[in-house]
Amino acid sequence: MTLPNGDATWRGYTMGASSDLAALWSPTEGLVGLGGPPRSPKDNPPPERLCDPCVPGWAVLGWRQITANSMAVLGADEMDDLAATMVDHETIDEFVFHDARRSASDLVVFAVADRCEYPLDALTHTQAEYRPSLQWLAADPTIYSATATTQTFGGTPVAYADLTVANAGNLASPSGRQWTLSITAHGAVTGPYVRITAHDEAVSWPALTLTDGQTLTVDAQRRSWVGALRVDGLIADDFPNWPILQPGSQTVRVGATTGTVSGSFVSRSSWT
Image (cartoon, rainbow, N blue to C red):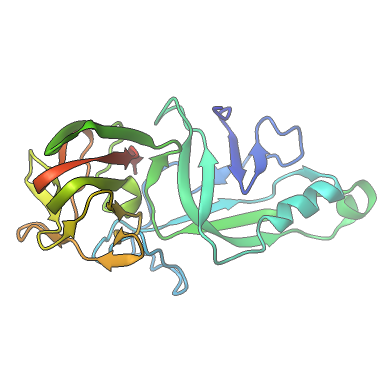
């Protein structure tokens, strides 16, 4: 279900325009940090504790500081519920919001909670009306489609499949969250690979042999596994990272050097 413009959810708590003062943005300050490009790490170095294993070390896209100051929250129970979502400062979670300028569908940033503060004043004591200020931090600055797109291939096992993958956004993100993958072997399979054919950007496992029914899985941290066994993928010599989905449509070839496979390719559009 698409959120109304001006609404957002964090760990199951809805804030914004349609919350009827349960958690309403400040009319003058609103929600800041999602309406433009990320902060430059050169001019605005991120806090030392801010890290994200899904973002490659060489990526210099920046980071995001998302703030909502002087919100209006009506009711002590509502304030307790909101504060409870901000206690865990280590776990990366989805901050879901809507921005019709970017997309007709909901968008998401992966962030950690950083601050939840509110004054104890006459309004809080007499009317249980709170004015909290909230902050989230995102080491992965990419704004993604909230819902990922899954494409399956090899209903009848194939040597390779050419998938048309669309990135409806304006950013080619290096983050592992942009795509994940699973490849299942049908019979003996050697040398699984993923390649964006237009740019010859590729990752492959040339020394890997899969037996019938084994699955190679690539997760959002760019780790690849066969069951509980970690295996390393090799990237093309002239490209510094795994294949990246450019804005627009591209052909992604998934297959193996020998043998036949099936599987799924999961992707998200990405914006600045």
